[in-house]
Length: 486
Image (cartoon, rainbow, N blue to C red; front, side, top):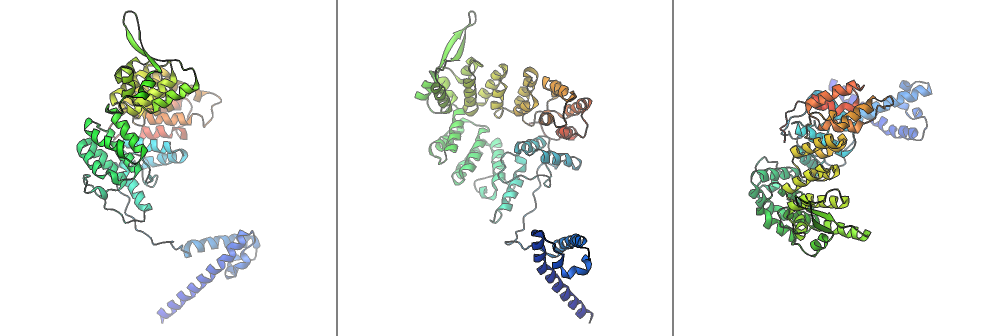
């Protein structure tokens, strides 16, 4: 008997729910048109009362509760059960610091700022919590530690069956068991450990990848590049279907001194320059740019630089690449300086890039150091950033472009840029939003102890500890440095 009563009650409630749901269309339609909807909700007449204004407010509350609890949206397609978000090799940042990271991510909308933050954390040995930030599948500019999250995102967006996830060493046979981001990280690790084995795996599987994937995978050969890679690179430079992949292979060959033979273009470019001898007691060679007489000559010289490699250009001048860099008359022709630096960054060997960075830094050409920074090791980048801060008085934002996010400079606030920043913050007309980007950049390049000292100095300049402009410095100062300095 009790069971029958309960069944009837359930049926009655279901009918009532259906009735309310059917009437919701009329209620929402009236609200959409700006009309009162209480007259259409006869089923709640007693609850709504007689006052028209109060009735609308009560109806709004009841309708919201009904739609939120009794109405479920049906998925447009079959639901998929995704695997758990993978654990990363590095720990999640401390819970107490997550609000700071969230605020930085929320207030700094630029993609570069987010990339800088996750690179900074990875260099210190930490990762972001997945509730605060997750990379997209195609986020190539994030640390390798997030490869499994990128692949998880690719899996979530894919309608195909998930591949097997493997922690095995990458081989030709298990290539397909890796999702793209994890495969790239595994290949990079194999390249560092066993360059020949990595090249053999890549050679076997290279043709089956898309042009974008081929370009990304081929770029890994810049690590421990050697003459053993020549045959593979020559085949790609000659036969690959994608121009950008062929261009990258040619660039890597040029770094090995095996670029295209010096020909008419190299000779024509060399004609824009003269190798002279200067000095009375100590005779030295100097490579000087000939004066350009027309805009057409300027365009032609730039086009020749874009289509040649460093070894061919220096050979056409009768010099070795390192001799060309040493003899170049830096600062006399800035467009020529910029073109040569681009040539060195694209086709020069690592030691030539280091030599060029030292040369342009000695001449105060900060912009040219930035162009070479990506080819320098972190310690060299930090050295150049610190030197430019002290000798050239550059701003922290420029220093960060040189240094990257693993610099850990000890006292940048004592540099000219720091003194200028403190003076500007002390001014009577200083605004709460002034110098936010400069302070953020300072937080990225300074060491943990340097960040703590900087906070004390900035507090003395009148900034509150809770000032959002200090978020990056506060995060830096509070974060235990568990990351290995690379």
